Length: 232
Image 1 (spheres, one colour):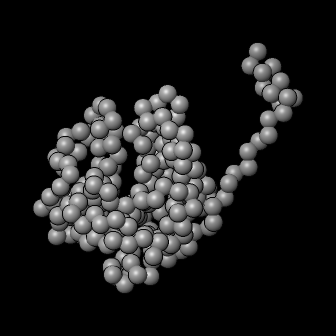
Image 2 (cartoon, helix red, strand yellow; image 1 turned 180 degrees about the vertical axis):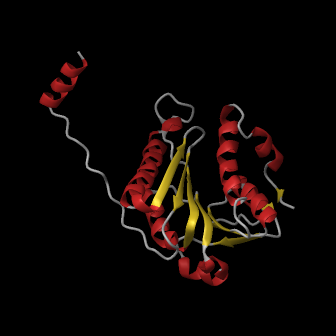
Image 3 (cartoon, rainbow, N blue to C red; image 1 turned 90 degrees about the vertical axis):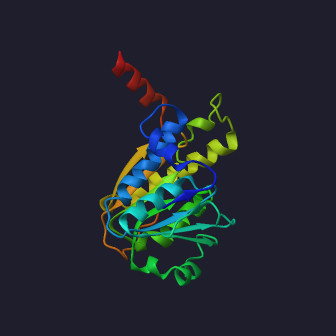
């Protein structure tokens, strides 16, 4: 039975599909819950714990399915939840060698990888390079905080630095998908701070292709005039 310290887990279940920021947040977390509940004895790797919102939801699903949740954070978040299915490691989530020593079950394959730790494009890219090969075929990779809209000018969290960072993380997801398009499905969920969910179609152990930025068209005065003429 999962016990949470900093919030009431039941509020997430009750807010699922509801209005407001809490409703969006709960709905996105419950999409992870639903996927974990599709797997027998799932192995879930969570990068980033904080107060345990996602941790509690994931642990609930993992307990129900008889699996294991491994959560990583550089801070001591060991009191965020209580669950017999949960292992917390206070560690940098790109220290893969040590993590696999502490949690060898991950080497058997990961059913869901949830990335929600350091919000920096380079760090998220490195996480994908390291952990993608261990995600099982049919498994999922989810990213929290991919929607820059709440941080844009005049919005509820108006902050230019965070807008830039969130936009960059969303771009990593976009670029990674198109570099590996044949092996992935991708969906975005906007609102709150946003979530992206990929499903891996490639076999476990297959390494990903490096990020590929799609070339953008350069808009000239001639092409702009042609576009405007076409609208007339």
